Image (cartoon, rainbow, N blue to C red; front, side, top):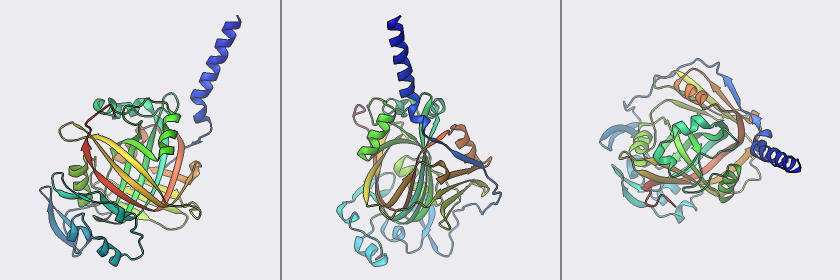
Length: 348
């Protein structure tokens, strides 16, 4: 009888430890969108401000006289400094670019000099998450199990204000994973990655609003990019991103509260992504992000999704988002995006 009591206590403690991380989280704020407006769909017809170029065998408009038109991802620091004297370029000057052939000629890493973003990490349905990761990728990394039956989804809205490929907006929906070849210890694995400032994930969706960003992402980085209109507003108390479908119909919005960043100091975090190239081979790419101003919150009211019946909204609903784990407000950051390389040793 005594052994049974001890066993029962052990089981209860184990259950508490398994589910405890979820007890203290706020329920995700996911609303039904009231916005029904539409915008003009994006076309590849150049405007008066554009010039046509060819990249990866495809013609596309780029900003006439912009950084990409002149330098094709190899922007001289003295030119950038002259055109944007307000930007601190000290970090970029420590990084050496390398010429790469990735279906087109580019220079890695691609520099993002001035940008803003909001990120929400949610618990989500683990069964659905596992369906979305290719078997070959699951052989290298595993979706982190936050609590039984729940994995983690990161949704990030980006506004790249000034970069080597001019400017554009982007949405990222990713699965948070373990490091390659590492055991899945749930919250411990997540905290380890956060403490190491070395995050890992598998990208599910990555729409952008310029053809240049789409082609570079698809052909150069093996990323799931396509072209949609994306609006970014920095008014009032929120950073707000509106996403539309390919025809210009409203899909969903993501609004993040502007948090106090007065005490933040610059820090660098690496975000790694594993995916498959066109030959079905595993590749590893990463972005080093230098957060200039950043603050975080665990209050679900600080970040809201407003969903419709559009394709992205439908996909987000299918993930079964449950609770907010963390919200990151990053009104000013810099980044260096490296071209992916083949995974040579899948046990590392």
